[in-house]
Length: 268
View 1 (cartoon, rainbow, N blue to C red):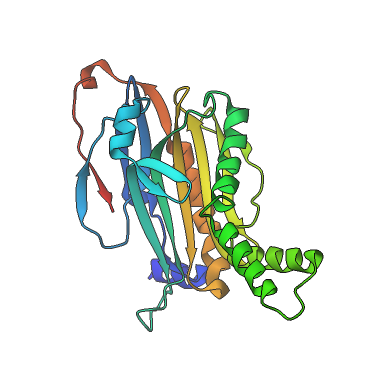
View 2: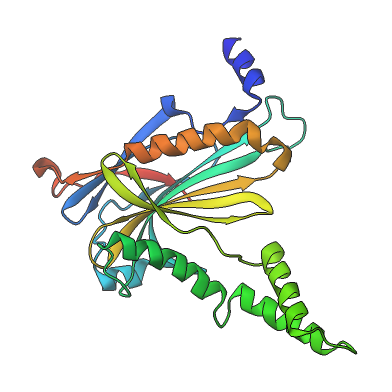
Protein backbone atom coordinates (compact mmCIF):
# COMPACT_ATOMS: atom_id res chain seq x y z
CA UNK A 1 0.00 0.00 0.00
CA UNK A 2 2.85 2.40 0.87
CA UNK A 3 4.51 1.72 -2.48
CA UNK A 4 1.23 2.28 -4.32
CA UNK A 5 0.76 5.64 -2.60
CA UNK A 6 4.35 6.56 -3.46
CA UNK A 7 3.78 5.64 -7.12
CA UNK A 8 0.62 7.76 -7.31
CA UNK A 9 2.43 10.69 -5.67
CA UNK A 10 5.36 10.69 -8.10
CA UNK A 11 3.14 9.87 -11.07
CA UNK A 12 4.86 6.86 -12.63
CA UNK A 13 5.95 3.26 -12.20
CA UNK A 14 9.24 1.83 -13.38
CA UNK A 15 12.65 3.26 -14.07
CA UNK A 16 15.92 1.96 -12.58
CA UNK A 17 15.41 0.27 -9.20
CA UNK A 18 18.72 0.22 -7.36
CA UNK A 19 17.51 -2.35 -4.83
CA UNK A 20 17.71 -4.81 -7.74
CA UNK A 21 21.21 -4.04 -8.99
CA UNK A 22 24.04 -6.14 -10.35
CA UNK A 23 27.71 -5.14 -10.38
CA UNK A 24 29.20 -6.14 -13.72
CA UNK A 25 32.96 -6.49 -14.23
CA UNK A 26 34.90 -6.35 -17.48
CA UNK A 27 38.61 -6.82 -18.08
CA UNK A 28 40.03 -4.00 -20.19
CA UNK A 29 43.56 -5.27 -20.82
CA UNK A 30 45.29 -4.78 -17.44
CA UNK A 31 42.40 -2.96 -15.76
CA UNK A 32 39.03 -4.12 -14.45
CA UNK A 33 35.99 -2.01 -15.17
CA UNK A 34 33.14 -2.23 -12.66
CA UNK A 35 29.67 -0.78 -13.09
CA UNK A 36 26.51 -1.24 -11.03
CA UNK A 37 23.31 -1.38 -13.06
CA UNK A 38 19.75 -1.95 -11.89
CA UNK A 39 18.14 -4.92 -13.55
CA UNK A 40 16.10 -4.06 -16.63
CA UNK A 41 12.31 -3.98 -16.35
CA UNK A 42 11.98 -4.59 -20.09
CA UNK A 43 11.36 -8.18 -21.10
CA UNK A 44 14.29 -9.43 -23.19
CA UNK A 45 16.28 -12.60 -23.63
CA UNK A 46 19.47 -12.69 -21.59
CA UNK A 47 22.76 -13.54 -23.24
CA UNK A 48 26.23 -14.22 -21.94
CA UNK A 49 28.61 -11.44 -22.91
CA UNK A 50 32.36 -11.37 -23.13
CA UNK A 51 34.26 -9.81 -20.25
CA UNK A 52 37.63 -9.42 -21.98
CA UNK A 53 38.10 -6.36 -24.17
CA UNK A 54 41.56 -5.64 -25.67
CA UNK A 55 40.42 -2.07 -26.25
CA UNK A 56 43.55 -0.75 -27.96
CA UNK A 57 43.78 -3.59 -30.51
CA UNK A 58 42.83 -2.27 -33.94
CA UNK A 59 42.23 -5.72 -35.43
CA UNK A 60 39.96 -6.73 -32.54
CA UNK A 61 38.01 -3.49 -32.88
CA UNK A 62 37.53 -3.85 -36.64
CA UNK A 63 36.31 -7.44 -36.24
CA UNK A 64 33.78 -6.64 -33.52
CA UNK A 65 32.60 -3.07 -34.08
CA UNK A 66 29.07 -1.93 -34.85
CA UNK A 67 28.40 1.24 -36.85
CA UNK A 68 25.54 3.70 -36.38
CA UNK A 69 25.84 7.15 -37.95
CA UNK A 70 29.18 8.62 -36.75
CA UNK A 71 29.47 6.07 -33.95
CA UNK A 72 31.74 3.04 -34.33
CA UNK A 73 31.88 0.95 -31.17
CA UNK A 74 32.09 -2.42 -29.48
CA UNK A 75 29.28 -2.91 -26.99
CA UNK A 76 29.96 -4.11 -23.47
CA UNK A 77 26.46 -4.11 -21.99
CA UNK A 78 23.05 -2.47 -22.36
CA UNK A 79 20.17 -2.07 -19.90
CA UNK A 80 16.73 -0.54 -20.49
CA UNK A 81 14.13 0.80 -18.05
CA UNK A 82 10.59 1.71 -18.99
CA UNK A 83 8.55 4.45 -17.28
CA UNK A 84 4.81 3.79 -17.35
CA UNK A 85 1.63 5.21 -15.75
CA UNK A 86 0.67 4.09 -12.26
CA UNK A 87 -2.34 2.46 -13.89
CA UNK A 88 -1.88 1.52 -17.55
CA UNK A 89 -5.10 1.81 -19.51
CA UNK A 90 -3.78 0.96 -22.99
CA UNK A 91 -0.69 -0.96 -24.19
CA UNK A 92 0.68 2.23 -25.80
CA UNK A 93 0.51 4.37 -22.66
CA UNK A 94 4.25 4.24 -21.87
CA UNK A 95 5.76 7.55 -20.79
CA UNK A 96 9.20 6.71 -22.13
CA UNK A 97 12.36 4.71 -21.60
CA UNK A 98 15.86 5.28 -20.23
CA UNK A 99 18.66 3.16 -21.64
CA UNK A 100 22.29 2.84 -20.62
CA UNK A 101 24.96 1.33 -22.85
CA UNK A 102 28.68 0.95 -22.16
CA UNK A 103 30.93 0.61 -25.20
CA UNK A 104 34.49 0.90 -26.45
CA UNK A 105 35.43 3.35 -29.19
CA UNK A 106 38.64 3.89 -31.14
CA UNK A 107 40.13 6.67 -33.24
CA UNK A 108 43.54 7.40 -34.76
CA UNK A 109 42.68 11.05 -35.47
CA UNK A 110 43.76 12.35 -32.04
CA UNK A 111 45.66 11.29 -28.95
CA UNK A 112 42.67 10.21 -26.87
CA UNK A 113 44.60 10.74 -23.64
CA UNK A 114 44.39 14.47 -24.40
CA UNK A 115 40.94 15.12 -22.96
CA UNK A 116 40.62 18.57 -24.51
CA UNK A 117 41.30 17.03 -27.91
CA UNK A 118 38.72 14.33 -27.17
CA UNK A 119 36.14 16.99 -26.26
CA UNK A 120 36.66 18.66 -29.64
CA UNK A 121 36.76 15.35 -31.49
CA UNK A 122 33.35 14.03 -30.40
CA UNK A 123 31.57 17.22 -31.49
CA UNK A 124 33.51 17.41 -34.76
CA UNK A 125 32.67 13.77 -35.54
CA UNK A 126 28.95 14.60 -35.17
CA UNK A 127 29.15 17.69 -37.38
CA UNK A 128 31.39 16.09 -40.01
CA UNK A 129 29.14 13.06 -40.39
CA UNK A 130 25.81 14.86 -40.64
CA UNK A 131 27.21 17.53 -42.95
CA UNK A 132 29.29 15.08 -44.96
CA UNK A 133 28.66 13.39 -48.29
CA UNK A 134 25.78 11.17 -47.10
CA UNK A 135 24.78 13.17 -44.04
CA UNK A 136 21.22 14.14 -43.22
CA UNK A 137 21.95 17.87 -43.34
CA UNK A 138 23.59 17.48 -46.73
CA UNK A 139 20.50 15.74 -48.10
CA UNK A 140 18.30 18.51 -46.71
CA UNK A 141 20.47 21.17 -48.40
CA UNK A 142 20.26 19.32 -51.70
CA UNK A 143 16.47 18.86 -51.48
CA UNK A 144 15.74 22.49 -50.54
CA UNK A 145 18.13 23.82 -53.19
CA UNK A 146 16.40 21.64 -55.79
CA UNK A 147 12.97 22.90 -54.70
CA UNK A 148 14.18 26.48 -55.06
CA UNK A 149 15.57 25.83 -58.54
CA UNK A 150 12.16 24.59 -59.73
CA UNK A 151 10.38 27.76 -58.67
CA UNK A 152 9.47 30.39 -61.24
CA UNK A 153 11.40 32.79 -59.07
CA UNK A 154 14.08 30.91 -57.09
CA UNK A 155 14.78 32.07 -53.56
CA UNK A 156 17.52 34.58 -52.98
CA UNK A 157 20.68 33.15 -51.40
CA UNK A 158 19.61 34.65 -48.05
CA UNK A 159 16.09 33.16 -48.26
CA UNK A 160 17.48 29.80 -49.41
CA UNK A 161 19.85 29.66 -46.43
CA UNK A 162 17.00 30.61 -44.09
CA UNK A 163 14.89 27.74 -45.44
CA UNK A 164 17.77 25.29 -45.14
CA UNK A 165 18.53 26.36 -41.56
CA UNK A 166 14.87 25.97 -40.60
CA UNK A 167 14.64 22.47 -42.05
CA UNK A 168 17.87 21.37 -40.39
CA UNK A 169 16.63 22.70 -37.05
CA UNK A 170 13.30 20.88 -37.35
CA UNK A 171 14.18 17.70 -39.25
CA UNK A 172 17.95 17.46 -39.46
CA UNK A 173 20.92 17.40 -37.13
CA UNK A 174 21.46 20.92 -35.80
CA UNK A 175 24.54 22.07 -33.90
CA UNK A 176 24.88 20.56 -30.44
CA UNK A 177 26.41 22.11 -27.29
CA UNK A 178 30.17 21.95 -26.80
CA UNK A 179 31.49 19.06 -24.72
CA UNK A 180 32.45 19.70 -21.13
CA UNK A 181 34.40 17.94 -18.39
CA UNK A 182 32.51 16.29 -15.51
CA UNK A 183 34.00 14.40 -12.56
CA UNK A 184 32.59 11.11 -11.29
CA UNK A 185 34.32 8.82 -8.82
CA UNK A 186 37.66 10.68 -9.14
CA UNK A 187 37.62 10.42 -12.94
CA UNK A 188 37.28 13.36 -15.34
CA UNK A 189 34.80 12.41 -18.08
CA UNK A 190 34.08 14.26 -21.31
CA UNK A 191 30.32 14.86 -21.44
CA UNK A 192 28.24 15.89 -24.44
CA UNK A 193 24.66 15.60 -25.67
CA UNK A 194 22.94 14.97 -28.97
CA UNK A 195 19.92 17.13 -28.36
CA UNK A 196 17.42 19.22 -30.34
CA UNK A 197 15.41 22.24 -29.24
CA UNK A 198 12.15 20.84 -30.63
CA UNK A 199 12.40 17.32 -29.24
CA UNK A 200 12.64 16.02 -25.67
CA UNK A 201 14.26 12.71 -26.59
CA UNK A 202 18.05 12.95 -26.46
CA UNK A 203 21.35 11.12 -26.00
CA UNK A 204 23.79 11.86 -23.17
CA UNK A 205 27.38 10.64 -23.58
CA UNK A 206 30.28 10.31 -21.13
CA UNK A 207 33.74 9.51 -22.51
CA UNK A 208 36.81 8.32 -20.57
CA UNK A 209 40.21 7.78 -22.26
CA UNK A 210 41.68 4.27 -21.95
CA UNK A 211 44.72 4.58 -24.22
CA UNK A 212 46.09 6.83 -26.97
CA UNK A 213 43.59 5.39 -29.46
CA UNK A 214 40.66 4.10 -27.38
CA UNK A 215 38.08 5.31 -24.89
CA UNK A 216 35.13 4.10 -22.87
CA UNK A 217 31.80 5.70 -23.72
CA UNK A 218 28.64 5.51 -21.61
CA UNK A 219 25.52 6.39 -23.57
CA UNK A 220 22.19 7.28 -21.95
CA UNK A 221 19.20 7.33 -24.27
CA UNK A 222 16.14 9.33 -23.19
CA UNK A 223 13.28 8.09 -25.34
CA UNK A 224 10.26 10.27 -24.62
CA UNK A 225 7.00 8.72 -25.82
CA UNK A 226 4.67 11.25 -24.17
CA UNK A 227 6.07 14.74 -23.94
CA UNK A 228 3.35 15.83 -21.51
CA UNK A 229 4.57 13.26 -18.95
CA UNK A 230 8.34 13.73 -19.27
CA UNK A 231 8.64 16.00 -16.21
CA UNK A 232 7.19 13.22 -14.08
CA UNK A 233 10.14 10.89 -14.70
CA UNK A 234 12.98 13.12 -15.92
CA UNK A 235 14.26 13.93 -12.40
CA UNK A 236 14.29 10.26 -11.43
CA UNK A 237 16.10 9.32 -14.65
CA UNK A 238 18.75 12.01 -14.15
CA UNK A 239 19.37 10.91 -10.56
CA UNK A 240 19.66 7.30 -11.73
CA UNK A 241 22.09 8.36 -14.44
CA UNK A 242 24.34 10.04 -11.87
CA UNK A 243 24.25 6.99 -9.56
CA UNK A 244 25.28 4.74 -12.43
CA UNK A 245 28.14 7.06 -13.36
CA UNK A 246 29.29 7.21 -9.72
CA UNK A 247 29.37 3.40 -9.66
CA UNK A 248 31.85 3.13 -12.52
CA UNK A 249 35.45 2.42 -11.52
CA UNK A 250 38.68 1.26 -13.10
CA UNK A 251 41.27 -0.60 -11.07
CA UNK A 252 44.09 -3.12 -11.64
CA UNK A 253 42.76 -6.62 -12.26
CA UNK A 254 42.96 -8.65 -9.01
CA UNK A 255 45.62 -11.34 -9.24
CA UNK A 256 43.14 -14.08 -8.40
CA UNK A 257 40.95 -12.97 -11.34
CA UNK A 258 43.62 -12.33 -13.93
CA UNK A 259 42.66 -15.35 -16.02
CA UNK A 260 39.15 -15.77 -14.72
CA UNK A 261 36.15 -15.62 -17.00
CA UNK A 262 33.17 -14.02 -15.28
CA UNK A 263 29.64 -14.40 -16.67
CA UNK A 264 27.61 -11.26 -17.10
CA UNK A 265 24.15 -10.99 -18.62
CA UNK A 266 22.84 -8.21 -20.81
CA UNK A 267 19.68 -7.32 -22.66
CA UNK A 268 20.07 -6.71 -26.38
